[in-house]
Image (cartoon, rainbow, N blue to C red; front, side, top):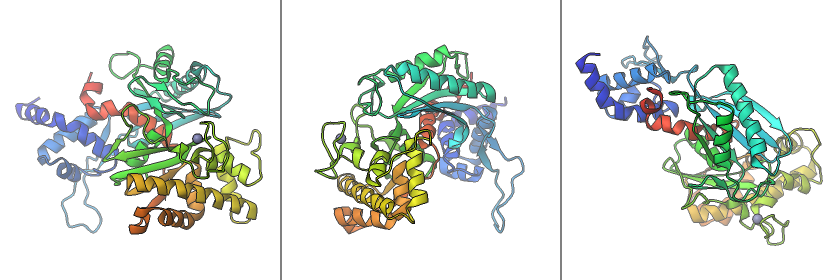
Length: 411
Ligand SMILES: [Zn+2]
């Protein structure tokens, strides 16, 4: 290596992480944009892009072309390497699990679902999902940078315990992160550098879904992003402030599911009644529509989504049920808007289907019932990612690489 290139790289090493994050989130499609975003010289940006390419993380187009109609100087196109390493992502929900491999850019490389009863011992389902993920990894032949687990419970920090798994048979305080790590070691899922087991992370499913929507989906560009959504059962919320999840002092912030939206409503697992959790989740939709999900017809969430898509336009009972849920959800969102003053709301899970069915009605309730809604409107959008909790779980595993690409992958 020449002296000049060494010096440039040393100067550029601190820029590797920020550069990778820009390509990862689609904000640096060319080397010219990367140069401008990093505020470095073209030579340094070139060295940084070259180093990320050598690590197998991005591709640099060797034959730069100017955009059609542009008078500007041609620039090398940058993209995440489609054959690069992946993160193993795992999600547990009330009806089973799903494993996935996720590359940079939030790209789903492969997924494998599994349906079944979730046992009271978390190790049972966590070992199943890890084995499914390990099989995907083996079949793909990709390097694995780390692993992330999304669970339908608040996860205490820094202990990694599931504090309120209301919709699973797990005990409160189940050590999900340590169990996940033990299962990864048992399945011999090894990391990129030294053959040691990969590091496993665990977090609440909606928190990581919010991170994924912020980085790759409908939340891009928001500074105070509120995400509310259902899993298969229940409702969660998350707040992303200037790119970082707001998790509170110990990981329990934004437990929005237990806001009361109907004082005389359905009894909730938390001991109260009329909570957002039981008034606006998939089970609430079926109850309000006077229908029952079909046994063996797919997960409750997917059946509820199909009910809205197929029946909402032409079935008065389903329409009434959807409107009832929209009104309840609107009340909950209005309360959150008053407290948090977000600049964007993204709705996930069943709530995505509700805003797609009648966004005008929902935005109307939020505007009527909130101070901020009346003084200016808050955009309320459907989530745009498929499997956002899995993409978000993978973000946890990608974070050390984004922080220090050479430290993790340089060997
Ligand atoms: Zn409740």
